[in-house]
Length: 209
Image (cartoon, rainbow, N blue to C red; front, side, top):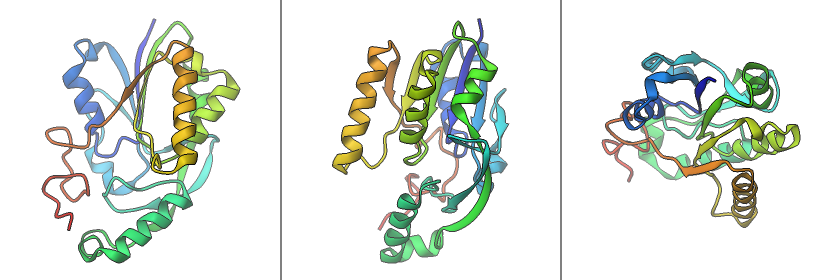
């Protein structure tokens, strides 16, 4: 049996640092970090993690990635990008620090298929997701593919939960995952000492006004 930690939306490696800190048997885990943002590549790999300069998604393809500097808000979703553009246009300090998001092409993997092709149901797999709204489509595909049965724990930050549609969808998915025996954790590692990137909207060193 393998022990596996899959870090989806690795940013600067903060989640792997936190995992290595809080998990007593962390050194026994195979660790994979997925992060397509070229501005954050310099931080990887962390520890014994394997770094993949790719986005997690529902298909193996090249895809548009709305790269928002080092903020932590970069996303595959146009909806998220529109929010970032609106927010930046209203905050001079954001424009100064980050500039407007830019569209780039990145490689993406079908996370559901990647897990199925690389692991067995007897492996112990922890998946962490902080992927700026892409979690809904990815988990939907995992339900359809029946690959949620590979997952033992899901550490996740749900996005857009201030909208009724996504709040309800996240709640429904949480209930379904719990029914399948998957342990759930609300995840956050975007703070010191785990977060190293200071030019980030989550950093205490960043002026949020």
